[in-house]
Length: 308
Image 1 (tube, one colour):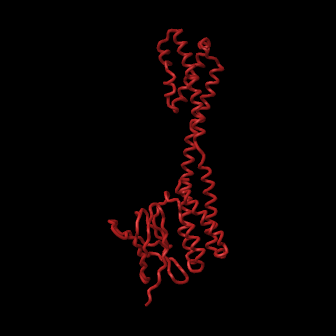
Image 2 (cartoon, helix red, strand yellow; image 1 turned 180 degrees about the vertical axis):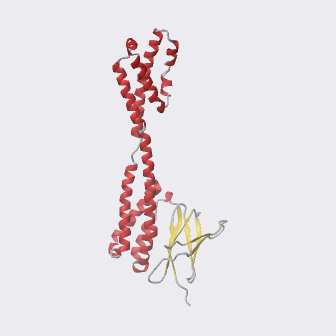
Image 3 (cartoon, one colour; image 1 turned 135 degrees about the vertical axis):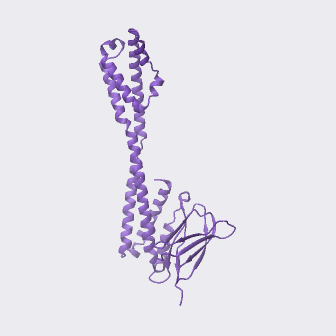
């Protein structure tokens, strides 16, 4: 998980703790029970995916490096044997073909090593009778082939692990998106009914929804607009205007609440803001809030109907 995901995950667990502690208040509500069950299941899935994501390619990369080092050493020995043989028969062209230093052997790309090691093994096998006096035996050829085979097997492993990590990273993003929907679109709205019915429970819930790891915050201001009359219900298409209080060149930022009464503003600069909430047939509400650097402020507002 990223630091932002860890902070959001921590917040979700605090929410579940509050919901568990106040279960007697909402347990008879089927809609709330269902979404709480979904969130708990999602948190368990997040733990599992996060654990799998901890798989690292470091071990495979280290193993590949060790095998490559062993293969390079054996290649160097074989090339020395080939050069000795070439000198014994005065074959300058053959000598130059295998006249590679250890540094040059190490510089060969991993993807090219397999083909080159195969060519070395084939030359050694084809000329085994002539090379025996220069240290090449069937045993050394067999050992070399085994190391080359091991290198070929491990060559793709680190990339496979990296690919798997990418898949898991995307899975985490998808799960956190779903978690955010369960909290923001469902649970936040379901619990609006408790603003007046059970303010202590609702206050605990609001506090649990705050993400305290300031370095991870992307949303500056979030909230829900509801009616102030029983039964409490969300108000969609309410106009929310955010304006810097004084001495700012920032233009007003305007949003409309979603179908579930939510609004959010990102990237607000630190300072005091005037927030105005308007909706046809409802009284306009104006609030003064403070936006702190890298912290999310939550503002839930209830609108009263205008009297005829």
